[in-house]
Image (cartoon, rainbow, N blue to C red; front, side, top):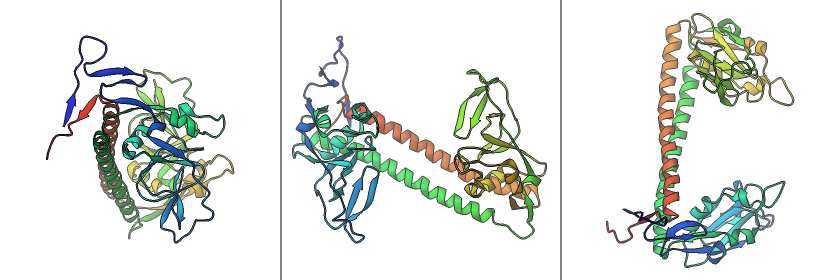
Length: 372
């Protein structure tokens, strides 16, 4: 349960105080991080690394191996010293951390998990102390001010509420991953050549077309998306093609096919295709997703594809348009389900962001007296 604080006639809501970190409840405090924990340096893992170790070796990118000894064995908040400095970690099991990752010893009066969520709300790049590889300084971290609830119980309650949201997000991400694996398996099975299928070059079923510069058609109020290898980059007042099409990068990102069935404009680095009569564009799109495009890369620098090379690739096709469409519809239904799950995941993440903004500032208070 949550109690929402009401505004009074002044600029400071009733029951709140104005502080260096913004409005917080009157019974909350502002303290430097150093009053709640001490930042500690990681160490080289050379002497403790072991394939048979029981303890994770942590770096800024996550787990990089295992150790036969631990460096610390109590709940701790970790943050990058060098490199990736904007992804705090929380550990409540023994671990070893390398020199590029700080860990912390949390004072017993404070909840390590609550402090972790505070770390997650900080823009660490604002405290970067290097012009090259991003870096943080232990003293800089310890001097940062954060708002603190008056009791360990309230800190723990806030941490638990946010942890529950994290668990929901994690479960949704795992479900999406599982559904993608199922779809990948279905794609491989449904597109596996069957009896009666015929082998054709892609050039027999489609023509690879070059995109064009968007300079003359770009328009903030345009009706048509301008597509590049990374996705939509603007709007156009005219379209380049208006029929179902499969698109693939000519240069740069060459392994992420895209399907379009509404009018669009494609830039020069993104091929589009005109599909010949008797063939299903969506079926071909799924076929493109199973092609190892990097094996057709024709450049030693920026990855590149050639239209003729694409058109010479040989694949097996069902002899009827109806069978192609049925396969495409089956896989498309799986796509739709995954998109719906991803939309829900996005909502969960937005909810968590909102909860952090309200719970970590005391705008909403959890009722600690409520019994189940």
